[in-house]
Length: 107
Image (cartoon, rainbow, N blue to C red; front, side):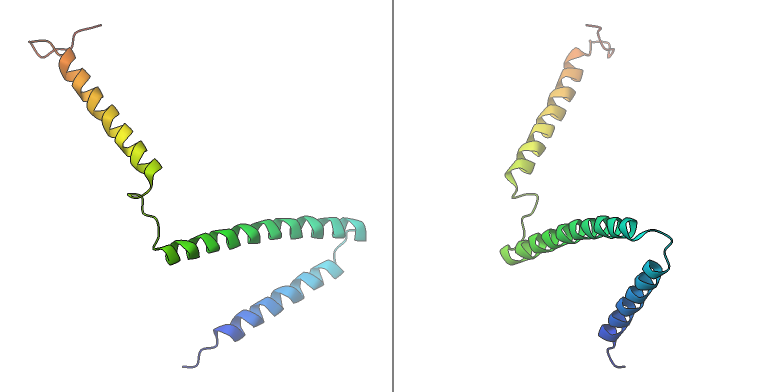
């Protein structure tokens, strides 16, 4: 079976473009309102595309450098050790507050 993914994507984009043009030509808005709407849409699209590009570049850089795992991230390691310390100190305090009969003493 022949690979036609490029033709399918091109056809999809051509159809979407034709739909947008037809919608703009038949829209009941004034030209000024239509231009303002297009400007807003283009701005949103540009921001989304910029974000996707930055995410893609960062993933590509991670792949080039071998990726940074959570274990090698010093901030993550520090946070994990702090949580472990808090968990162990809480369990130590609970056991030290228990009386000889197994009930907790009120403080």
